[in-house]
Image (cartoon, rainbow, N blue to C red; front, side, top):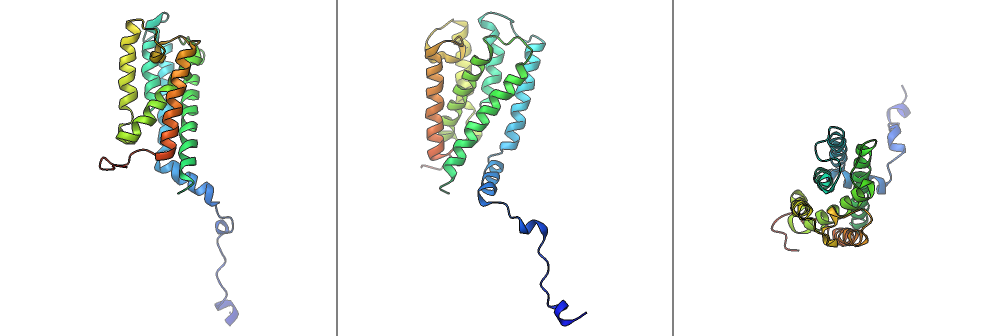
Length: 204
């Protein structure tokens, strides 16, 4: 062994020669801190639950009462300078995954009012959850969507037709779509700009 061998710098690991780009690393850390992997798993469970509810007829097959159980599951599925963009993409991405998971769960089964009503309801409930998180934080963001879902169960029994009760309206109801999309857009905009409240003492 020569002196040159002794003082020769160690060879860099193979992985060090291909560093992960900062943008990808930031996005992955953001997704992990927001528990996105767990959220995707929970959405898959919601899709399986919807499939079971439709397959084994846990509710009425036709008529307005057939919306009760799917509505409950839909509500359950809805719960740096680069940070606002990450919030925006995460919220939109998980909303799309929620719709896809429930659509796959309903595949081959008789879903009352079809996939359009399912997508509209998930979009609207998600908007409520995003708006609620600004006040309560992420852990309690489910309270407003679930509370509104309970209110809509009453509206369903009373056969209300107001567009504001969009979860119980037919899929072709334009007013219901406008209300659901407006709620989602408002919640998404505020969530992207401010982010969820992180602690109860946060007055910002």
